[in-house]
Every structure is written in structure tokens, then in C-alpha cells.
Length: 259
Image (cartoon, rainbow, N blue to C red; front, side, top):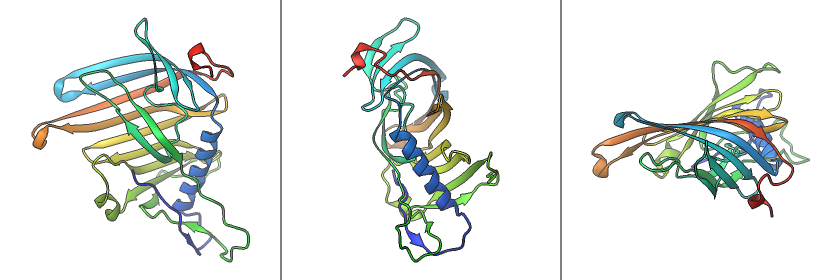
């Protein structure tokens, strides 16, 4: 996945969407660094494969140790109990980051997914002694613009659309994801929605909420088209997951998460 890199420029005092992106990325990185040690939650996932007329619902209770994404998964109401990664992704995940998304869905088998190699984006403030009156960040890989519904009201939300440049998409791998849009809360700068798109009708969205002062995922959606050999025949599937019932225990909620 390609992500932005900073370039410094002199420019007017107008807050550009590039700077707005930078501010939200820094806020998200700080929240990610301050994640609670343990999180418990309930997740309801719905898998749909329209062309095969197949649907499946998965409900799980999850307890996760956030520092290394080790989790206890309980299939509800009385199904399998296992040690794995947080399902379907760890709720403290920072979508404004470098990351790898693995195994998002297996329509004919179990549904297992996780994110790893997460490195939040962080932009340094201008150094002391900078001669530029204003420092503007330009995203090398993306053209950033404000969406029509974007608001600069203190209690509003900023909405930025992001279009990858052609040279970026041309050099990407087939499993790439590209930023498509970002919505953040103006009061906290924290993202409330991050969207990605990619080849093969790939779509990945992450929506956030704040619970007891912690920034966590509220909902996520993933879509992709899988092609048969020689791209003869295809299957499109979608996975929707909703998170709820968060708690943030100070100690391990399960003995297997201690240590």
C-alpha cells in the first residue's frame, strides 16, 4: 500500500487539505501509542457472496492484549474458543498507517483476518529557525481535496478525498490499497472514517468511535472480487463487521493473556 510522504513548501496561510491530513495522522498516531493494555468487545460480522447466494453471520466475544495482538476468541453462543489475533482486526488499529492486511475472508471456509506491520504515519513539526512563514505538507502519492460536505466548524467534521497519482497506481502490486477519503472530528482531529480502494473492486473502510476516552473501531467493511484462473469467472464478496460492548480492563481479562 502506498502512503504519503511530506515535502516542505512556502505558501499562503490557508489550511490546505494536505496539512489537515497531517494533523489527523498525528492525532491518530498519538491515540494509537496511548492504546489501553487490554480491550474486550463483541463483534458481529456478516459475510455475503451475492453471486453464490451465500450469506453467513459470525458473532464473537473477543479479549485482546493490544501490545502484540494476542486475543482470546469465543464463538457465540457456545462455539469454539481459541487463541488468535483480534477478530476481524484489532479495534485500536490506526488506519492512517503503513500496514498489511492478511486473510480478510475465506468465503468457503472460516473467516479469519488481521492487520500487522502497523507503522502509524507521523509528520514532524517545522524545526526551530525555519525561514518559511508557513509550512505546507504536500502528499507525494495523492491529490488531496476537500469534499463538498467538509466543514471547518469547531464542532464539525473535515472530509478529505484522496486520489492516488497515476505513477503510484502504475507501480503498485495487485493487492495494493490506496487511500480514498478521510473524515475527522474537528475538535480532536481523530479520524471517524478512513476509506481505501484498490484493484479488483477492492474496498476497505474503517469507522471509529470514542468509548470511555479510548479511540476504537466502530465498524469496518471489506469488499473484493476474486477471479478464477485466466480471469474466467469471478466471485464478489463483502464482509461487514460491527464492534460493541467495549471494556478496557487494567489487568488481563483471561489468564492466557497475562505475561
